[in-house]
Amino acid sequence: MSELADLAEKLKSEGERFAAIFSALTDAQWQAEVYTEGTVWTVRNVLSHFVTSERGLVRLFEQIRQGGAGVADDFSIDRYNASQQEKTKELTPLELLEQFKSVRADSVMWVLGLQESDLEIVGRHPFLQQTTIREMVKMLYLHNQIHYRDLKKALGSKQVHT
Image (cartoon, rainbow, N blue to C red):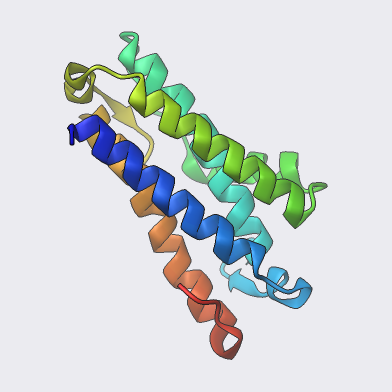
C-alpha cells in the first residue's frame, strides 16, 4: 500500500470510528463538560472543533501544496477556535455529525489526490510550525485522538465504547 493510501485509510477508519462513537451519545452526554479552563467546551463543542479545524486545515494544506507559506506568524489558535465555535453555535449535534462525516470524506479524497512528492512540501502549520504535509496529515487524526482521551475522561461512568 502506498503511503498516501495508508494515510487516507487511517483518516477514513478513524472518521468512521468517531462517527459511530458520536452517533451513540445520549442528549446528556452531548452536554458533558470536557474542558472547563477559560471557555467551557462540551462534547458538542469538541465535535464542532473537529469539523471546523479539519475544514480549515485541509484548505491550509492545499494552499501550502500550491506554494503558499502556511499560517501567518501572528496566527492564534485560540482566536481561530473561538471564532469557529461562534459560527457553529446554532448547529445541532446531528448536523455537526453530518458535517464531520462530510469533512472527513473530503479530507480522505484530498489525500488520495496528492502525489507522493507532495508529502515532502513544507509549510507553517498552526500547531506544528514548519513541517511537511505528511506530518500535517498525520496530525489530523492524532489531534482528534488527543481530544478523544479528554472526552472519555469527561464522560466518566457514562463512557462511550472505543
